[in-house]
Length: 479
Ligand code: 4AD
Ligand code: MG
Image (cartoon, rainbow, N blue to C red):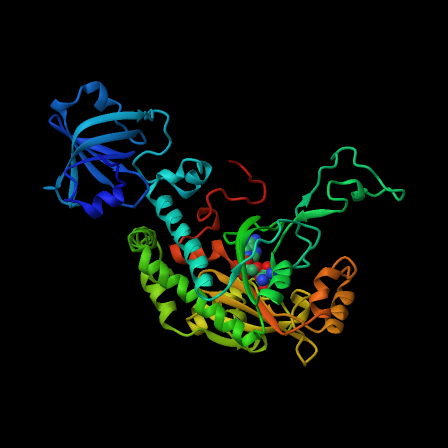
């Protein structure tokens, strides 16, 4: 007898008379004559119902069938007379593989708060909600590789340990094997990183972009997809200290091509979710609607699947930072002092409250903002002829704000060096990066998609800690 997953059982039902299923008990209910056991094995949001007649099984066995226990069930797959499922297993044999003491197992068949489940992140996979989220996470990772492979991009593995700070924000985690209490010192009394493992100061990467550019300037179209690390002390629902980023980089693409790629890519991913994850999305949507009931009508957001379709069907709005500042300056919340950070002049950095106003209230669709002030963007961005802005682009999404950040790159060596010098960046140690501009330089562009921000959007979850299995945030690195 071939063991089938619950997903397979539900799909191929009818073709297998006697079947074996293994999984974990979600719930058990019933009466003196019969027990109904909802068994889930993670292959799908749906459970398979196991019908266990009391007379067939010793009380000893059925007593151990509690929420969370692992079971192996053999039986006959039949059409179900009850409502809620098409098929069920009439159990002939039940083996309790692993018990889950109901007094101690934290995940019980009731509504747990997301905070409680975060504290029990090692067990939250066992809930319908986190099963759905992590199946969608898998599907999106797969779709990303699928998209790039189909479009002629090569997957490049960029290093996690690096000596550079790609974004120049100084938000790095140091990597060292030096003794924290007694590090070797230089004559000047500073820590002597020459004696460190790599013979220099190193950190965890904040982005694979710089190395990605090197590869793109030979392979043409590349992407990276890996973990990145930022030691920014942002305790928000959209920031992680360890998050996954997808960074495509394309030789000969200008900012316009870059925007087209970003929109096409995002729409492909959303369509993929609708085509392949509908069972999980329906579950997530229902859960969201339950939550929304508690909100005031005007604060409720669009139904999840409707929202995903809406983004697919509408072209993204394009506008420059300068135009956005004009919109924001004369907006109601700015005039009524409703923004925490009022917009008073060109040059200020946009906060997520401003990004969300543009997307949710003003344009009511995703927005691509371009040509930001150079002073608030990274050193490598293409300098515009106006001498004060750069060819940057941020893609802004409803509920998320910035989901993608990218730019056309400065391909002119002198201009790039000028900017690095102005910012005090060490041009000598970045010589390897500058070589792309010394030898065969060309226009090129790329961007970074925050994988967990994409997942926030697709699953409708409100906190980024709930779309990564084990979140890393300030003061939190358990599990
Ligand atoms: O805008 P960022 O900082 O851009 C870069 O890192 C560039 N090197 C990308 C490139 O051009 N190749 O980050 C890109 C995206 C953001 O738009 C956001 O979605 C996500 O990464 N992101 C974070 N996600 C979770 N937690 C954080 N702390 C994040 N910081 C950025
Ligand atoms: Mg950014």
